[in-house]
Length: 378
Image (cartoon, one colour):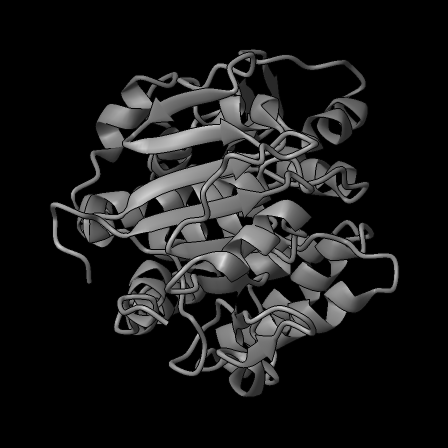
């Protein structure tokens, strides 16, 4: 590893596809590499407006700025020819690097480490593909595939130092005091962050008519339109609706650190995409994952691969209830009456999720896996 006087230079390239998931992962990774591995980081982003929502310090009008020790650059087209390639180049989620930048990489000595950071997957093929080299067809460059995952044969998961200790010391009472007051002891506290989902109507109906009070905090995100349609009224941040056993409040869009606190404060978290899934795991609370839908239904295979891992160790009835609810949620047709069965097993799922988190915490984290691989020149 280069000395502290000459830190290793990294470039991460990010195109914003899924609103906040892509930049969410890249931003966490960039910050952690700077804070824990001492690298000099440039983060190239093509949509600074989306970036600013999870990091309000970002000014979408500026082409260059610094946040949390990261040199943030606008990824413009054409790409600036004067950008000197870094020692390590990460193309996030198979984004295509600028051609003139790749040509400059080929001329640099030593040649840079070139990393293709793939999407998270629990599928068995990850073990055979993670770390594979891919030589460039014309240039003296080799790309390596890094695939985040859930065992030692993958690149691991993003987990900054001290995260679990932070969750362990989290002041839930203080958090709720600042967000409308601590609900009664028997209240189920839920966060809802998802894509648009027609199943929301049935879920809210179950909560309204249920015997157990539900305090639901909805983030200002794509699911808000579905919630508003189910309630028969448009919703905006800070709105609050009480109906039967349901007490629902809309939160403003949260920066990443505040979202982590929301997950820690709740008993059950509905999450979407990749970044919030991983953060829900580290929070150690039961969760329901709305996976990013794909036209060819490839997401269903990915969902089942994760469920196979997550459900291992649950009793058969609890695993069946969890799978049924998750499948219904992702198919956007969770029927009325499905919720009570799932809710019955939440105490078992809660203990199981803490064990699941603790097992994953024994594995190296993604930033360390990357930093160790790229520590020496090619």
